[in-house]
Length: 229
Image 1 (cartoon, one colour):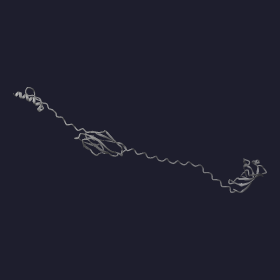
Image 2: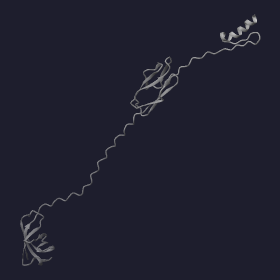
Image 3: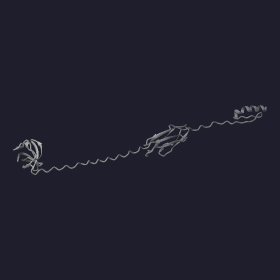
């Protein structure tokens, strides 16, 4: 009867106790069963990087997580300011980027608790424009030519009737418009000049003549009469 009870106990033990063992006619052994482990929280973020202009701006990172999972975020540099640094379940990390007043671009990151991070890049201000070139110097005034000679003063005898006589020299022109010198006076003739004792064409250098006429502003005499002396 005892043997039958042992056999029945051996058959029931696995279902009741969760262990295996043998009594009497075999060796005794045990085996434990491990209970399933609790699943760890998984937190993910959307996107890998964001960029901002030199003026800065606002941004947001979407976080995905199970409802019971909590998470936190932090920026690697002070020019990124987080408005919400922690949360639970699905949510977002909102942040602001300050103006970049430097002439070089800069980079930082926002890291979420499980190690995922978003790279943040910000452009630099453009360099200031180069100064305007200095105005070209005014060209030096070109040297002026020699001052014109002053106009000669009018002959004091201008307008007067004057008579000169002597030998003709420096004869030029053709009748009736002749020009010659008598007694250092330039004599000019024209169609109105009266020739006496000789014709206009008979005047030669060395001819003795007497000329009478009106003194011009340049000192010459416009002859009204020329006669052989």
